[in-house]
Image 1 (cartoon, rainbow, N blue to C red):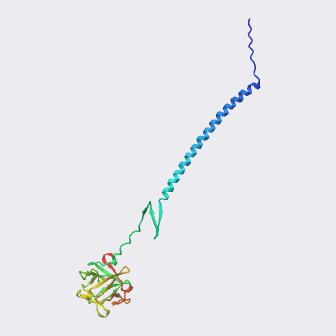
Image 2: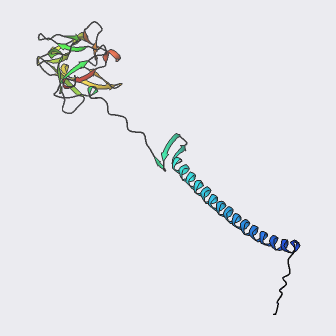
Image 3: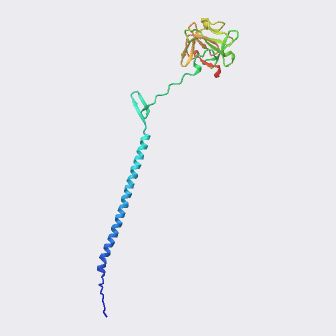
Length: 225
């Protein structure tokens, strides 16, 4: 018989430890490299996110800053994207401050009363707006648009008489022609004797040399009562 004896040299603990330590270091190195890679990726993603947020805030700031203020030597003026906005034009004067021809109107005084015509030719002031207070303004001179006549409900004309009196006449001659003047967005009527039509506080209608509140009138169309 042949006996083979195989002698295997048994390794000691001092010989095993270095190999284990080497394996552990390799595993640890691989783990650290992986951790570093993940950290670098997270850092890159964070930078991308911050850049995106910065661009978004910049765009919002540009949109909000579209309205700019332009300063001139004559004052402040606001513009939008370089375009200057001019103030809107003033509204046209109201219709009741204009002369309206061939339409029934009411002649309103400073006291809130209206010229009233009687069938006998007398005139005075009335708080009402009825038939006797209706007048029709007619052109009195083809060459002067601001020269008019006032025809009453009784088909008579408002006449400037002597001694500052006012009544109605059956014709349209010089004493029945009135020159229109615009004062403070109201109307003044000057008669043939260079005196202004006036509404007294006691209801009388006469003429005067002055031009103040009592001599100013408003023309109110009947259709806009």
